[in-house]
Image (cartoon, rainbow, N blue to C red; front, side, top):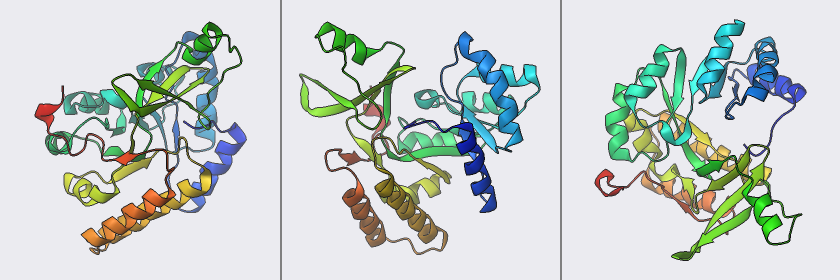
Length: 272
């Protein structure tokens, strides 16, 4: 997440969504530790009070805390790269999940086999930074101390970049927060050119990551995806229109961050 909202902000945003006939989902998706459980118990009644439509998480501990406290909220299951199996997602559906966020690392050929087996709706990220690794270790702080730059920082708005000797041209964004270090893929995702294929696969729910973006271009990119969705709904989708939208997204996207289709077009047999 690029930032966290205060409770007052969350209440206003949920009310704003409901006033416009939309649903509001709040991520409770950090890896929960014992010290955070009590704070979570106090947070769940607040989410019920502001009438959140669902929470999004990948931590089974949240499910148990909700059961123990009696604060049952609709749940969207999201374990990032682990959501690659219809069997495991259907298991969480049996535990009460009403939807699931699919891994970005599932090619279209495998999505075609996976999605029809699901008993709950699937969401897929279609734009933005792709999470690569999360560690509780404070990489940036440790590196700063080791190199004599103890004040070195990296946040979601101003990340540092990693590279490797075999691919010096690739730059992996890295930032650090209270949960540790977060590393992202060198190439951001843009599935706008293949949205028609997602619809054919039965994936109608899409998410757009706002990390490493200013607010105005992000809002404009979301609007382009909304226009693309409307064109698909109305049967007006064409390759020329898709290319036009894709060029507009490219113009709004940070120039130093390459865009691509990620794992989507890859041959599953060639992924090791």
